[in-house]
Every structure is written in C-alpha cells, then in structure tokens.
Image 1 (cartoon, chains in turn purple, blue):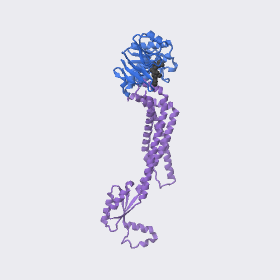
Image 2: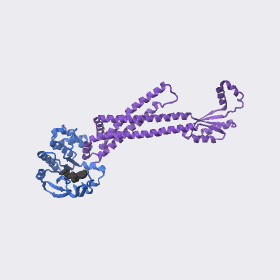
Image 3: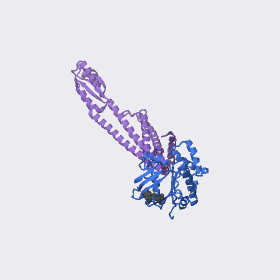
Image 4: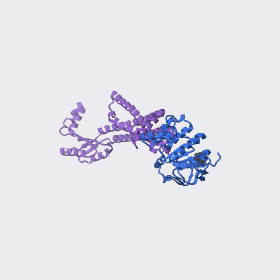
Length: 296
Length: 228
Ligand SMILES: Nc1ncnc2c1ncn2[C@@H]1O[C@H](COP(=O)(O)OP(=O)(O)OP(=O)(O)O)[C@@H](O)[C@H]1O
Ligand SMILES: [Mg+2]
C-alpha cells in the first residue's frame, strides 16, 4: 500500500466517524459498556490470582524430623529439602526454639515444662514454602521420602479449595471476556454497516472505476479502529478512576486482610491489552461489514 | 480488441441473458448495441465489466481471458475501461472537479497527474467553467458529461456506455454522442448500448442487434431497425 493512500484513508475514516456522529457515539458507548464489564472481570481475575499468590506464599508444609536424627543429618535433610524443585524457602524451627515459644505461650504455667531443656521431647521442624501450590501433593510425597523425616503436616483441603476457586474464576473470566469481545465486534460491525450502506453508491462507483478491495476497505477498517480506540480510552479512564477509588476506600477503612493489586502494577499491561482489544475489535468488526458490498 | 466466443449467460433464477453469442470488436471501433428491452444488452456490458461472469464461453479483452480472471485482477481490468450509465452515478457531495479527480485518486495517481488530467478531461466535455459546481446544480446532459469526463480521465482503451442518453432529451443526447465520437476519434474503442434510433441512424456506425439473447444483425454501417 502506497503512503499516498494513507492520508486519504485516514481522512475518509474520520469523515465517516463524524458524518455518522450519533451512531458513532452510540457504538463507542456500547463498546465502553462491554469493555467495562470486560475490565471488571479482568480486575477480578487479576486480584484473585494475586490473592492466591499471597496465600500460597504463606502456605507452609511442616516437616517434622525424627528425634533420633543427629545434627549433621539434620543439616543434610535441610539441604535435601532445598533440592526439591518446587520448594521455595526452607526455614529451620529447632526444638529449643519451639520449647521456648511454647513456654512463652503457656505464660504462668510455663513451669510445667521445667527440666525438659536437657531432654527436649519436641522435634526439630522445617517450615517449607512452595513455588506452586498445584504441585503440593507431589512435593509433600517427596518430602515424606527423605530419610529421617518422621512426619509431615499440611492442609491439603485448603490448597485444593484455593486452587479450584482460582481456576474456576479465571475460566469464567476468560469465557465472559470472549463473549464480550464477540458482542463488541457485532456492535461495531453494525455501526460500520450503516456507513457502508450510506456509501454503497460510492463503493459501487469505486468498484467500476477500478479500485482494489483493500483501497475500499481501509477507510472503513480505520473507522472501526477509531471507534474501538475511543471506546478503549474512555473505559480505561473509568476503570482506572473507579479502581483507584476502591483502593483508597479499602485503605481508609483499614482493611488489611485482603490486599489488592496496586494500580501501578497493572495499568501498563491493561492499557496495552485494552488498546489491542479496541483496535482488533474495531478492525474485525468493519471487515465483516464491508464484505457484502465488495462482491461486485 | 474484444472477442466474445460462444458466450452464454444464464442468471441464477434461470433467465437466459445471452445465448451463444460470438463477435469481435477491433481496436478503435465505434459499436452500437441495439435491441428490444430485455434482449441482453446490459448483460453484454456487465460481462465486459466483469460484473457478471459467463455461464459458458469466453470473453477475451486484449488477449486476456476475462472469464478466468482472478478476483484480485478485476480492478486492473476495469482501469482500462471507462464506463458511463444511464443514471450518471456521480457523487452528490463532491464537486464536478472532485468527481472526476476521484477516479484518479482511486487508482492512486499522483497529485501532479491529477492536476494535469482533470482539467483536460473537463475541457474535452466542455465543462471547464463548471468545475466547482455540485452535480445537483447541473442539467442532466451536463451531469452525463461529468460522468464521461470521469470515464476517460484515466485514458482507458475502451469506453463502455449503457444507455448513456436514456435520461436525456434528443438535443442533449446528440451532444453526448458527439463527445463520444470525439473520444473515439482519439483512438478509444467505444461500445454503446442504446435505444436512441435517430442517433444510431445518423451516425452510420457498426450496429450489433440483439434479440432474446442472440445476435440478430451485425452490420458495419448499420441502422437502429426498430420502431420505438
Ligand atoms: N441479475 C439478474 N438476474 C436475473 N435475470 C436478469 C438479471 N439481469 C437481467 N436479467 C434478465 O436477463 C434478460 C436480459 O436483461 P438485460 O438487462 O441484459 O436487457 P437489456 O437489453 O439491457 O434491456 P433494456 O433495454 O431494458 O435495458 C432479461 O430477461 C432480464 O430480465
Ligand atoms: Mg439495459
């Protein structure tokens, strides 16, 4: 495509957008509406996985080491645990420490534990966090295999529930986003269809004078892209402000048990994604609507 | 040159537009296509323009078998042919000048070429002084002259006209045909489907008469031959 055509296409596209002012406005707003719902689901799924990440980071498997194991073996076990691929962090909680903690917890009744310092009945523990909770089952099995490990403790039910919930939320989000994308394409293509219809005579003239299909398509495709792009900008602004407001509110209320993803961490990717969506939806929408009129 | 070789066109609903039609038109000829309403004149023109494709037979233009043309090649075929229709088909929101320039923009001609060729075409059809007007401010004959200027501005080898004078009074019609004759004298092949008896009879050009989809006459210096 020659550059010479470029300015003509863009001029024509803007002319289309403005000559159908109300229709363009209406479809921009409908695109905004569906991108808003799209954005809500995106924010929801981002936050759910962020939330899951936090829980995963906190989630520990306790590896209880047999009391007959000596100092050297204890250190070796720590090393073996560290060598398991899914293991993120390993912290030793030695029995002395645990006894001290226990005493502290008992407070006044701590005296019942007097004398146990010399012959500590408690086991040494390794606190193990994992990179991925999906692999918890497997990792637990590997931990149990290590010789000198008496027992491991974990809560597989919590993990399973968490994994299921995050998975199903991201699945639902993907389907909803897909459905909204289709709806937006449909809306945009209907608007463009109006412009195309209004200009069918012109298209017909272009055809018999010898314009190529792409020469005819470009202005409409750009028109769709403009609509999609404006829709994306407006919905991004609304979402950005709303999300920022939500974060502010959460902070004011002093809610700390759920942490939301900070805006600074997602705005760049989201803007990129939205712009891409807007442009793609607009472009595809108009390609669909011009097709019929090119068959001459 | 244009060659129709055993061309048959049957429309999707079964109507026969043309039935085994063969003829040859040489470069530089001026040919009238005549015949009763529904005979197949517009069908012939649509086949030339590749607006329709033959059901069987071949349409050959300049050694190219148009019936087998790839879709992407059609625009390039059309650039070698100027067309005018009974209903002018001008863009109402563009000036006379812009309507003619439009045909050049579409084939991505340079600004310089457009500035040179559009005034030439307008002066050939005698409309230089109305370049800034809108089609709605022109008479029918003037509108058809704009359409003619648009058809020839890209220097096509063929000028194809489907009842170009159908909406015009006899005097205006005669003027249009005079311009067509001028264009023909400059080397462009002209093919014109028409019901204008007086024009055909006075021009003494080649006449191909079609009746019910078949060629009834093909005369070098023919007459219209029907009562309107
Ligand atoms: N798109 C179409 N689908 C079906 N039949 C068609 C189509 N176009 C034309 N026809 C039929 O084909 C036959 C030839 O039509 P055509 O338009 O070529 O006639 P014509 O000679 O141009 O007539 P006129 O002088 O009235 O313009 C007619 O019977 C017409 O009804
Ligand atoms: Mg006709």
